[in-house]
Length: 160
Image (cartoon, rainbow, N blue to C red; front, side, top):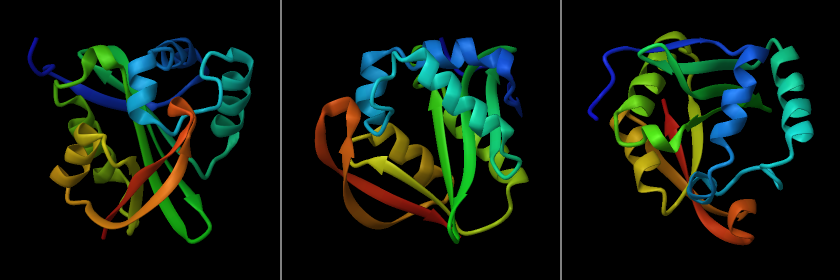
């Protein structure tokens, strides 16, 4: 399948939500992401959460497209003094370099540092994306992973 020719980002809009919700129905993707909503199949809760996100001008929300097709989303938000990055790519597109290229595009426009990201310790692919882009592991924690119904190890990465 190979890498897509063009990976682009655009501001996320309500019309993207059907695809973004569909991606989050994949059990394996949820298990790998681990820190997901309590019930990823709850469409009203998904829509309510996204309505709040889209209405917040302080959040940076981008839809990821590969060769013109929606394949995921990225977000940057503040929690107190800290700024965080999160992303989700459709599992059907994993292994094609899309996450790395999309996060790199976002980093070109979000210049405020430091930027942190949390990842399940056993999510080697997500860890590799962050490390390729200059994030360094700065700590470890344990957190409740809804997708696994268990407390798991998570790694904290930071880009300075």
